[in-house]
Image (cartoon, rainbow, N blue to C red; front, top):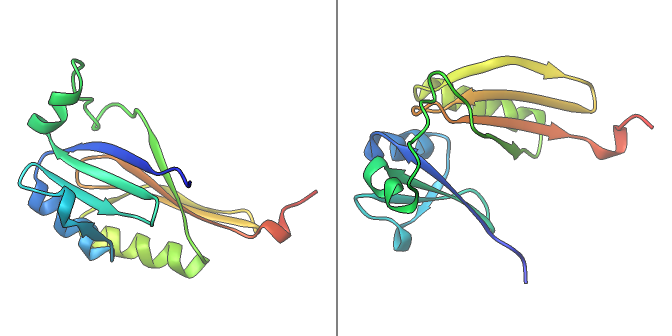
Length: 134
């Protein structure tokens, strides 16, 4: 059996967050979505549960991190090509995201990063395993 991963992320405005990720071309599993949560489908085995702050607080006793000043996790997402990295990055910026840092091109690997509407950082990367230096 393949393992699945569900990354849980707190969001301030669920409808805006759904629109943001929809603009990037991602869909949602409505069976696991309601007015407090949206199940973002990244792949057949990778999902992000986008939870309102009140819903997120039901799963932890800790405070929600202020992403304007702190980073707890960097979410790295593989892409099929350099073009897909650039397409997703352009869509994220057009939908209100911000560039987290400059692009990095190492020849065999290319990556860019954006912060979503809630400050969660997503790294988009393409790698050509056949070209990795020995």
